[in-house]
Image (cartoon, rainbow, N blue to C red; front, side, top):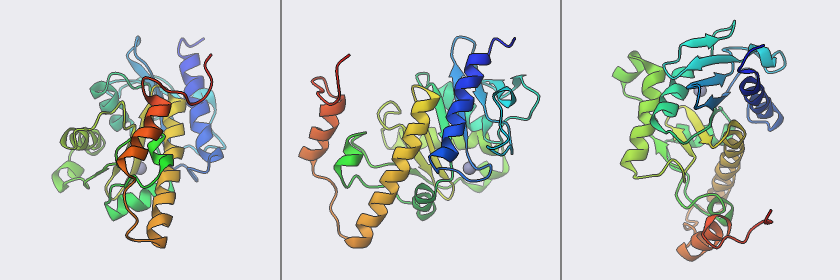
Length: 234
Ligand SMILES: [Zn+2]
């Protein structure tokens, strides 16, 4: 039996949540789950429909995107996942979709402004949109450089990947991450909702102001601050 069985199961279940949450159609999208001790991650095979996907189809690759175990070719975005796992040591899962509203903001090349408390319940910054890739990066090692583009965007905007667990890649779409593959998928759904709400808000009032600082702090801190009081203590 494969020693990666549990990792494959985590990855499989997280991937299967994407169509259930209506974040993907056909073969769009992929989720990976990392095992830091083994320095490998599990990722969806390339071009396999979700209805056909089985746990044993999940591919195990190392941080240089070389296949360690699996019969199928890994997702075409594997090098982007590998790059992010190498650069950001405290993430446990990554998710990429082409969900409609998040992609629309990416295509418009706009950050998603923080307009309400739903956004501030999760983090205090606008959702960053990285610029579209330059021609020489597209013609080179494209998926590897996609990872670099995301890291550069966070460095330039001085964002913490542990606070802001999502990015839009200009002209392409969203990448999200988190402590686990499940959290990365959760963040993809949150991002899609924030993108939809921001779009509708600006349709109703194109001048809608950014959420004011007192509400940003209140909503973020009551969930994530030192004296958080949202939810139950266990
Ligand atoms: Zn894509």
